[in-house]
Image (cartoon, rainbow, N blue to C red):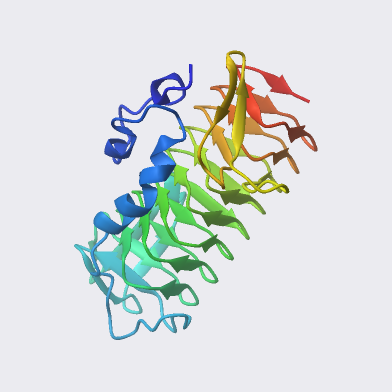
Amino acid sequence: MLTTGSFFDLTDFPYKDIFADCTTVWDPLNKLKKYTCSNTAPTFQHVCLTDGVPLESPYISFNGKLRNARECIITYGDTTKGGLSVWENGQILEGASVIMAGAVMVGRNIRIGKGVLIESGAMIKSPTIIGDYSEIRQGAYLRGYCLIGNRCVVGHTTEVKHSIFLNDAKAGHFAYLGDSILGNNVNLGAGTKCANLRFLSGNVAVKTPSGTIDTGLRKLGAILGDSAQTGCNAVTSPGTIMGPECILMPNATAPSGLHPRKTVIR
């Protein structure tokens, strides 16, 4: 009922090993710090990079190295559909990623996949992993221990802390995610907030038809199964577990606990 296989199709997820040997759907969060640290090496380096200082020029990440992009021609198509292209001296650099001027990096353990776009004003703290063809938009804030899959969107003024995005998950506008997991094809409406800390002290507990489960976690946000959605200005309480294809309606608050597949929360 609460296994990862009940919520997520991990067939094409490039980091599926973080879900191995997990008893409950929130167990991968217990492994996230170690996983992001061990799967990012301090290779994100260039003389242009100073912690906390916005980049003065655009840069590309290509074949594991950073280089200045001032001499490149960049086409900004739909990143999640492979529409970002970089040309240098008349040749296309297949799989090159683009970091716009004005982006801010903190730390060197940041892993960027192919065809990624990081826009001006985004701040990324290490350790963070960003999968292929994902887009980190202007004003996004990745606070570290973030695992972003392929073709994902971390949108304008969206804050992500200690969370996992499976492939094609999108938090496009004004969202907050703390200690949360978004399944494949999850879409968060603008202004969605995934609260992760109870007002009262103690661990987050999850109510299920079989009884209440102590997660052992002081902080736990939301788990959204594949293709779940939230409407604009929706809120999830700490320990909200939404099964695949659930819908949280606009301006609604989801109570903590398990919401079975295809539930509509009003």
